Image (tube, rainbow, N blue to C red; front, side, top):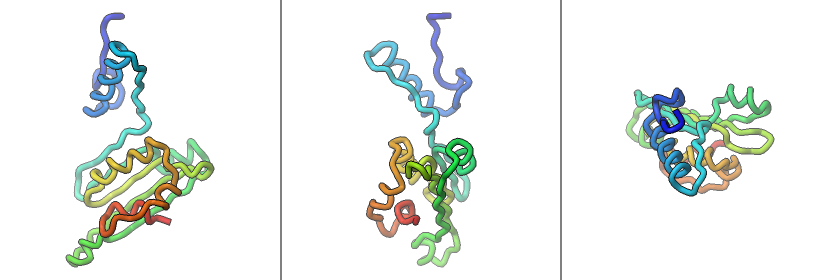
Length: 153
């Protein structure tokens, strides 16, 4: 029916509340406003709120290799300073997936405490098509777990 529109779970796309909200905003802006908005389904951050939590955005290493060919990955397996000082063995794993030809960060993936909180801000880098060099030039905020993203070489 030309007069019926749908967003969210009934559209057989990504079934997440923030995606449905963004689809609704894009529809309203396009249909009732003067802006033409589209939803970027290729840059949706996700998280699993387990122990430890997992979070990721953009392409996985395998998907990037299949799509782009030459990629670089940067990984870090570390123990946060707060765990070192407390004598806890809990570790975190971070991975940056980078298009080797353009230096663009195409994926960020992490496992560890606060990974979803850190990833929400890091997802901006993937959406904005920032380069690994942009991360390398960013001064670390010490001592935080997020600083590891700008220290991977």
